[in-house]
Length: 101
Image 1 (cartoon, rainbow, N blue to C red):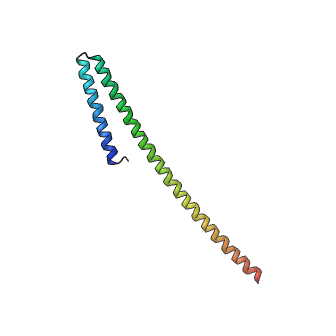
Image 2: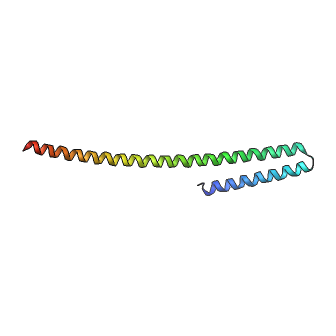
Image 3: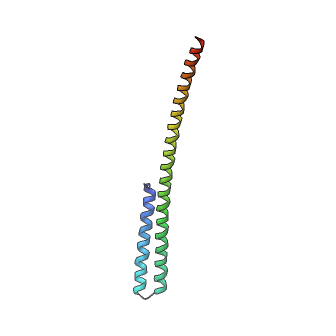
């Protein structure tokens, strides 16, 4: 989930896109087609950048989750390894006791 700062940035970006589109519509109605095109194009690029930002945030979130899962798997493997080592030590001790008898 994006932090508050990212949400604020996204909200500001969306507001700016809406402003550009409103200005583009007004320019178009006033038959100022070059200005309308420029404003609409700017709105498109701002929206594209906003989507890219959200995709990056989602990717970072997924990477963080994968890293957490990998750490958990490593921890489980280490516990299994310690358990196996403990069992092996106990078995060696018993074998040693048998050979001493």
